[in-house]
Amino acid sequence: MNTYEQAAEIYDDIGVDTETALFALDKIPISLHCWQGDDVRGFEGAKDVTGGIQSTGNYPGAAKNMEELQAMLDRALGLIPGAAKVSLHAIYGNIKGVSRDAIEPKHFQEWVNWARKRKLGLDFNPTFFSHEKSADGLTLSHPDPGVRNFWIEHAKRCRAIAAYFGLSLGELSVLNMWIPDGYKDIPADQLAPRRRLEDSLDEIFRQHLDPTCIVDAVESKLFGLGLEAYTVGSHEFYMGYAIKNGISLCLDTGHFHPTENVSSKISALALYVPKILLHLSRPMRWDSDHVVLLDDELLAIAREVIRHGLLDRVHVGLDYFDGSIDRVMAWVIGARNTRKALLIALLEPYRMLQKAEEKLDFTQRLLILEESKNLPWQAVWNEYCKRKNAPARLVL
Ligand code: RNT
Ligand code: ZN
Image 1 (cartoon, rainbow, N blue to C red):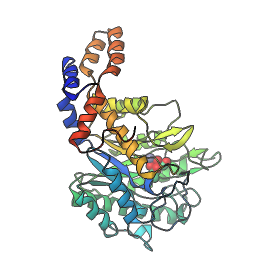
Image 2 (image 1 turned 135 degrees about the vertical axis):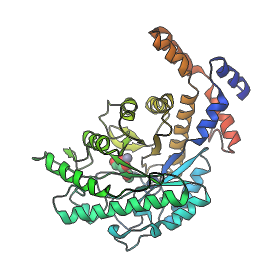
Image 3 (image 1 turned 90 degrees about the vertical axis):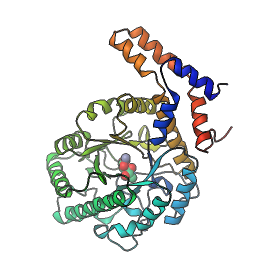
Image 4 (image 1 turned 120 degrees about the vertical axis):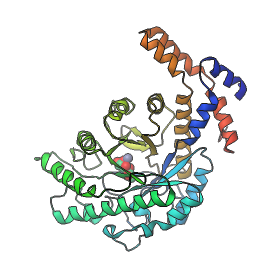
């Protein structure tokens, strides 16, 4: 077994400083999505989750209120070393009886107090689903201006809440907009809803908010359950909108065709959009939102972020919801895997790989890539967990 000192020497030989890697690793916040704790139900008393998303499974222990959800997050955070944030949806405030177009920062004050005590930042998401005004599958692109205006007002208020989070916690709040809008069956007019969505977004983003408090992101999707034929906010739509308007783009790893890789989109998009928000998820046959594994795609995503020095322009968030396993452990497993992937990427002998590639020595490139898999990153992980008072191993 490698001790940390032995591992550090091996890495030193290939030009990698483990202390530098650990320093960088510890600073990367991973944003835990609050909705894993209660199967995306929220505190409005909604019976069904709508909008084409679904959490399945009936493992006991879903949070029923804010206190339970915070207690669960506390348990998870105790097992996840390194910087963290929590991402809230608008339906998770103290909002009983408050209409979504009337929510204010005060309805989220308990979260701010909770986060401040733990030195956590908060991210935010308007909630456009599980509501009577989105029952026909359309919100910001709805043909009825009354419905559109309701959701525009909701989104504007959410931006104000996110800016308040940023201001009161001293850490940037990422405001991510995802809408369910789409059709179950083949549309006649694919253009009109997109025109309406564009107008709604222009109105929502019209107000300039302090960029040191809030960063706005938009999230595309391929399809939803019951919305299989057409998605208004497709990848092309939001990519275009984000580039044209200087808005950041959210890439959810479950929102593309199964053979597409989000990892290979990052370097291209980073040239054109201000920032990227990652919604790390694991699609299985569809956008199934399984817990993220330490698999090739997670590693590839981490490498893209680290290799290109994008840490200040990529926000790392989780987005999955599995109700068939312990919900706290769902956070813990996914977040630790993400942190491990980032560590492995930080320990990569990237300079060596680059040099081989510059010389067009593809044999050497392949060799380094494959030999890197034998490097003792686990010893560095163990050391990191020891320093952070977190368990290096959870079972076995
Ligand atoms: C849905 C999107 C979206 C949601 C959350 C609840 O497909 O991924 O991000 O998962 O906002
Ligand atoms: Zn998502």
